[in-house]
Image (cartoon, rainbow, N blue to C red; front, side, top):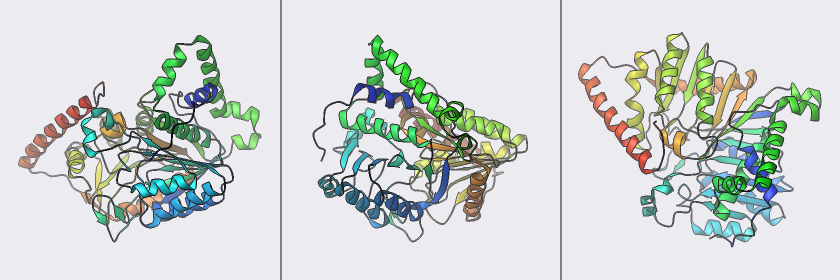
Length: 439
């Protein structure tokens, strides 16, 4: 399934990659163009067109891949690109893509696609090895270092679900297409994950080797500084035309990893919620956040901010639905409004605050995304983009049912019991997975 690993990448190249995800806080750049894409129906044609025009390279990191339906067009585009000499690298998660046929991987490699599997799953009972519970959940692509795609949409048809099969209505999901300087950290992140999967070397392994060598450590500090300079708009202004600095679409690419950015996505969301003045809209299929985020939502509602959650109405996993619903009463009591999406499965991961701030990506608000998985989001500070996203979300909320608070005391006791069960289950799961600290 996988070809023999080539020699280790150059040390300086490894340090460049490490430098990009060594930034602990979001760093915003101006001069980006970000386009909202709703579902695979919008994403797959845009992605295929970009790949068909690629002349140098295509890099992808995907959690789930299926050749059935619409997503097959992207896989065909990858094969065409590789056959005409474009360097195509694809890393997929071994669990998320476990049901893809071996013939698919063989066809891709035969066409010239360089394939890597992140934490391969040879048997489903491999999950008994708790180290396998940390997955690569990103959905990223960079084409020719000029176009990038970031979001929550897997390479799977909108109407198809691996567990539930085909459905009449498309799954609700979002991604963004990006041009501009924010592409650079997206590219280096995919390269870092691909290297980890291909050579079996973790980011922390790179760091430990560098820390042991004073000369290499000095070079790493140099590359970290260079990365910060290239991402920093002030330094950009010295290198680029002044107009680019003040262009719209200020964006930042943020990660959740197991090195320096364990809580970067979560802290970014918390900061935006604390600063909200009019409106907070959260769309996520899996909702069981830390207490700090729940308190922030409660506090926002208490100061008059309209806080709305859009969660699953049609459940793909019952335990996930139970986990979210045990929190309904607590949030509703403090003014948070909760809606459940009715037409189809909900898979989108979106947070929109006022008309100023939004994020679209792969990260849910649950323990898997916040503590274990590798996740990637794009933050956008741009009024026009946030307003267009708000219009799309208004349509989504319009197809949802608001869940009203229950006044039944017996129901509240039952909810407390279920909440205790979910809390203990989550704690046990995170301990077994080796997650340190409280959640």
